[in-house]
Image (cartoon, rainbow, N blue to C red):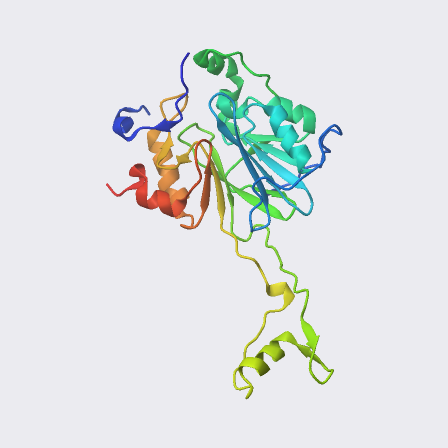
Length: 307
């Protein structure tokens, strides 16, 4: 059986051939389990669950809003029952299903997840021929082809996907496939306001005094220093930008370009002219393998070093 190798080796790189969308909410099926704490809920307030699925261990990502319970699912490649179970545990309602590209290991579960959730399926127009050629892809791997579903909306550069308080910007990153896309959540995509539950106390003479003034009296009795405490609306917890890069960028590597419609020239242009312009602090969630950052890949990825 052939192996659909996902990253491009540096040693053979030279030999490789070359606004806003609105969605309708749909309830998850009632047999889902009751929720429990998110597996990887991060400090910036979003629920993010990643599970490797299928024989090629595609990273399927679930990104949820803990307040509205609305979620976006990226690359449900296989094992849809596991994905549905996680959605049910966390009481998440799927608003949209996104395919970063149409390779079989990333789209094998699209039809089933759409069937169970009713959520629309999105991918880039340039990968539709690849999606329709699932028999060819399955034969390459020696497996049965998965069921196909209708693509409800075609993605393009600059689209913005919104769910809950979050938004993701669509970046067209061709090269691994003609219609590969990455999803970028900027650092302020879903700001979390910290509530100041105690703002004042009663002082020693029985009068109400703000905590800020009390601190001034304690450490600066002459009141010579002015220090402004932010209002509740200004207390924003920091969050790093997030990038879901599909098979365009990996930790220490890039996507292979010797499959259908791949182009080394295009993927390098996508990396250098688009992804490498993102902030160094951007956390990268690749389609396979471990998490990395733009800054780390800029410094250490052999494909991204100056020539």
